[in-house]
Image (cartoon, rainbow, N blue to C red; front, side, top):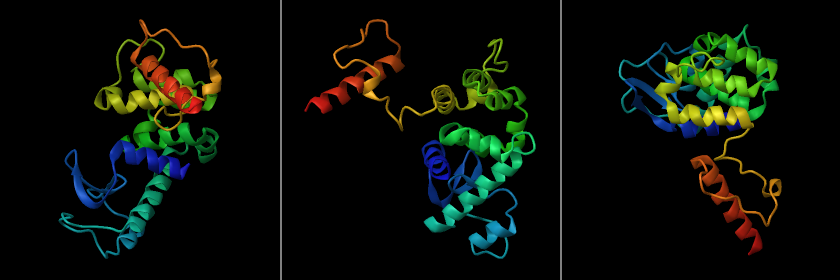
Length: 210
């Protein structure tokens, strides 16, 4: 799950081994925030005795960024407890477990713990309900988009879709065996997502024929 989460965060938040500002706060590596108190373990990774007053120009090696990332992952897992425990996370698998931890990176484990209906849906394996709770302030009524969804709409649309399917479209294509080779789906009236899937399918089929 760690490798998948790293890949997901790199796509969502980017990767930069030099300190840089994101939304008014200084970050480094895989979204590690420098504008909060650094633990002794984090300072040791950065080979510092104390925090810097100005992080501008500060750089780390890829290995140091990886080590900070592993600390942040463990912090995210610890922050979800006791509402959502490590065995619960492991049971979700790489994709859905990484979505949950990615949310902790963005809003903190304490913030995610407030989404009780969402976490219960994860425990129940109700992926449709979990995705609804990500997108709406009340997943059952669907009356108002969540502030969380509004702030990062593209990111969470992809995450909600992956929560439902169990995979991200950009990482894993549907097996072409799922549909008869000779049948092309009509494109009139298709949604954007259906059009993309159909184009991908036809492209893959053409490659196979060649």
